Length: 79
Image (tube, rainbow, N blue to C red; front, side, top):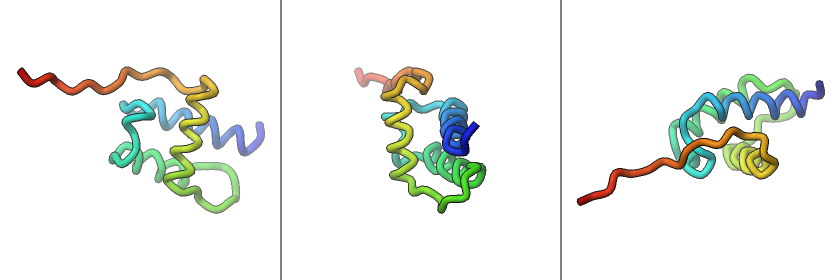
């Protein structure tokens, strides 16, 4: 398996372990954690990626149908 595919598999696994959907992920502690764990554990020797690059990778993985579908976060309605 190539290092790019291994890194992609790592990002998919890290995404599936956290509760938020891709759309709800930016600017959250979950995104910070995912980003940090991804850069620490990836197999390629290239420089670390930015948060923006990690999010763009997640978006392209979702578009490619490689991410699990998570329910959208709902906020309670005020009465």
